[in-house]
Length: 132
Image (cartoon, rainbow, N blue to C red):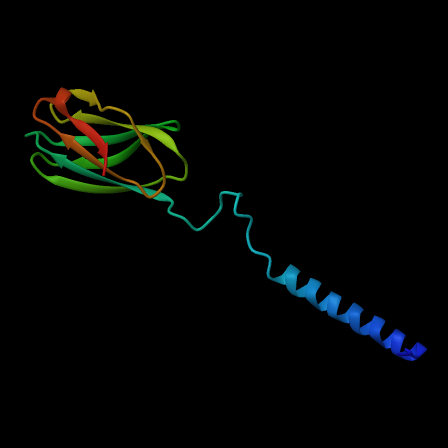
C-alpha cells in the first residue's frame, strides 16, 4: 500500500500531539515522593497514664529533643496525653511526685501512631512504661 506524502506528514503531527498530551497529563498527575517522609501517616503518639500512687504526679516525656511536659495526673486517677511524634526513637517518662520525689521509667522504642501505657505504682521503682 502506497502512503502519500501529506498522509505521512499528518501521521507525524498526530503522533507528536498524542505524545505531548500524554506527557502533559503525566506531569500533572505526579504524586508526592513516597520516600520523602512527608506522607499522610500518623504524626502523634498517645500516652495513657494510670496513677496508682496516692500523690499527684507531673509527667515529662524524655526523648532526643529533651524533656517535654505532658501534664499532671491526680493521685489514684487516670490521664491521657497526646504528643507530636514523627520519627522512630526511644522514649522514657519522668515522674515528679507532689512530695518531691522523681523517678524515670524504662525506655521504649516508639514510632508515630503508637499508644503507650504508663503505670505509676505506689512504689515508684515498680512503675512501668509499655507499648500498647
